[in-house]
Image 1 (cartoon, rainbow, N blue to C red):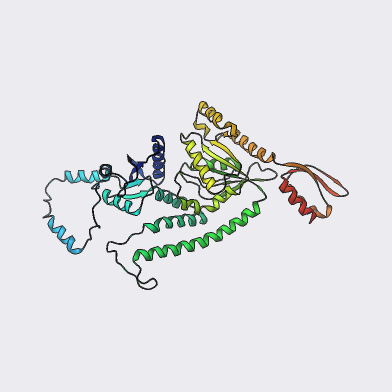
Image 2 (image 1 turned 60 degrees about the vertical axis):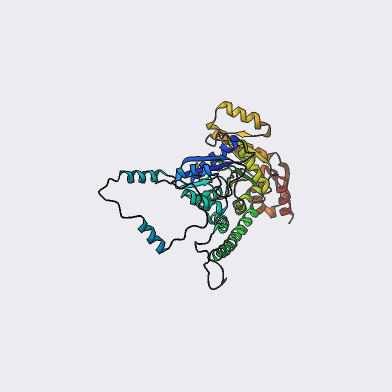
Length: 455
């Protein structure tokens, strides 16, 4: 049976009704991505999250009606269960009911319990005590926004690098939320003697994170070597909000078989492919992890490798879902993350995807608003529009190219391959000095070619 979930959110001062509704709609998409059915939403205006259990007393009881809980946070420590107490509780219930009595009421209660939500998802990052109190008041499992995003990343990570990055973020999230057992005074022997069980668990997590970071650093060095080998090539990186259609654009531009799914964070791994039809010099296109509002900082830090693709690109294609009513807020979220990683100065072109889902009036509205910045509106499923985008990418690099003539001596004919790989050859002739080429390339490419010829 699909788990049933209730969403809860507090509308804080300064948050508009539209932004609040947008945040809840996005949380619902995140929760559905995890495979939960969202059966209700509980929202409340407050100056701050309630210190005890996020919501006020009235809303907490309303929430408990949806989950089958008591709606109150028990005072003091949780009741310690012992064999004696359990035996006394069983005896105090009296004799069993007459089996001959009808069980309709019991069946109704069971059916009602099946209809109750078993998961509560909070659209905020909450403290361990708030989560614990919500669990005790509702009788349901409690997740906050960060834990939902971390779990989605955990499920979608495919490469070894992505799995290591997600595991580090997950352990960083779990460590401060470990809590003592009901006794609270358990001790361990051996190394760290005198540690409580939770202290030992936290130390094990720190050791595990250190081990994972060593493995990840080794992968990062390999990636850096690959990027260094590509640094002289023309590079385009696709960035944008999650599920904006970056992977669809990637597939359309490069003909690659990257995963395309209508899910949040479907792509976590960096993919690099050549623009097709292949150009001279070759243009590389890379896909990156999607962004989202309130993206946990640990995940931003963990996915350093995929974000480095944006930082080191020559051109960023900022992909936006043209059909999403919250596109302005999503554009700002992406720009904020780009500023955070230091990529805000990389030349960027806005790309409004999914134009097949909007009408002509909406398309013209986007053009009027963003056309002055060179924004492009297209559908990744329209070959003509994709071809126009490809020409626009080539034109961007063409604008910075220069035309020059170089001579490759006959004794260095092996360098002809390097010339053809890094420049567009417009003409070729031969004389006593060698092969004379008229080429068009970036100034940096000419400098490298001349060094090779003079070396």
